[in-house]
Image 1 (tube, rainbow, N blue to C red):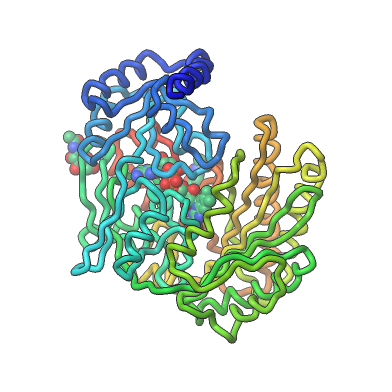
Image 2: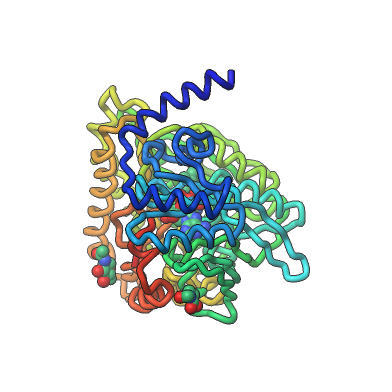
Length: 505
Ligand SMILES: Cc1cc2nc3c(=O)[nH]c(=O)nc-3n(C[C@H](O)[C@H](O)[C@H](O)COP(=O)(O)OP(=O)(O)OC[C@H]3O[C@@H](n4cnc5c(N)ncnc54)[C@H](O)[C@@H]3O)c2cc1C
Ligand SMILES: *[C@@H]1O[C@H](CO)[C@@H](O)[C@H](O)[C@H]1NC(C)=O
Ligand SMILES: *[C@@H]1O[C@H](CO)[C@@H](O)[C@H](O)[C@H]1NC(C)=O
């Protein structure tokens, strides 16, 4: 059994080996890494290499093979790896936590050095300080279930299967964001390996400017080996998902329009409205509901949502870890090539019609493709994610983030355009649907904004967690210039800026 499978593995990998062409300096760097970190570096044909180089959410990333994989178990081992890599300036490398970012070249590095943090995992709670120490490997299910035993939680993923490191570094939107801000806003300390391989500890109260930069700049300040996160109390919660057919479109969008400002008064409520476009250009909705309490509110916009008749209803009262597990279940079955793209839209008080406009345009863009019998398993969705004004209030109270949310923010909605498909030859076709969609929205925004006189409405920063690699996320941040100069200070040689994956300044 073991022999048979390892033979199969070798045959499968030989194909990769033949095509792969790491340069001589990369091979040398890998060799030096394996001397400096015995047993921590693996090469093609080994099980560790195969696992780490294949564990990605989007199947499209599983073919992008590194020259070698470093599997450190501690911050000093990460530091050693980065120090060795500093000697090889033309060798590309990148860090991976959960591997959920679907962008090629972010947590993957073709023919370079992959530093996988899957062994740097685990969560501990310090009751006296009410903080959690969270390591980047593993998934949110682990963190949330460990903390729930202490009656606390941290602001984190909404689907338990999502990775931790990348999520927290890019900002992170949570069911708890209307109560406490983005996930990164609750981070008060970072243990990180800097560009030159030094381990530093950043304390948000000692270095407030760097803390702001670390909340939403992605991978550009170092490899984070531990986050210290302010904990929040949690008990039983109410939530789950409901599915609706196309006939409920008008009701759903009406409820969404009421919910966004309503969330400012009912901070315990959260929703994700996912508008799905599937085979035969069928349109439906999956709505994730969350309420931080045993029972949802019985009046107000959240309650109005719950009045809409659904086809399937799996909402109920449960523990928070149970909810996150259930939410991730469907997504864990997907085995597809995936793409994300995002845009942020203003809340247009007197125009509840813009969501249907957006949805109709997405249906138009994807129609021919989804109607083709060859694409039965492909789908796209637009997720409408409320970013109500109250989120910025919490951001500011906690010291601020790179995305530049503030206490004077207006309501906004983050759109995530997600597609999944089977065939490699469709990669560019499908990614282009999302690009067409966001450029259409961005062209429409000025017209939607006419008649709204709050100048803050025009500040529409992109949300990094949901973005596509070619989007200029950091360039959309209010304090781009200041953040960029901090990045230049932290990484004067451009080790991270020019050699690793992820969004750049
Ligand atoms: C099913 C699903 C559900 C999701 N739900 C949410 C949600 O509720 N809210 C939300 O905000 N986002 C959500 N996302 C998006 C998610 O936040 C991003 O995909 C995020 O990148 C995942 O984190 P990861 O650890 O898997 O990142 P990875 O794919 O491992 O890495 C992403 C980027 O971060 C860098 N990186 C990773 N770890 C480190 C580290 N320790 N130090 C330095 N750089 C690092 C990598 O080099 C790469 O550039 C979801 C994604 C999926 C697939
Ligand atoms: C991103 O946007 C910033 C700010 O507008 C700009 O200065 C920068 O050149 C842009 N970067 C790219 C790669 O387009
Ligand atoms: C390495 O980087 C750290 C932090 O960015 C800095 O303080 C230190 O001086 C650098 N060390 C060397 C040897 O350059």
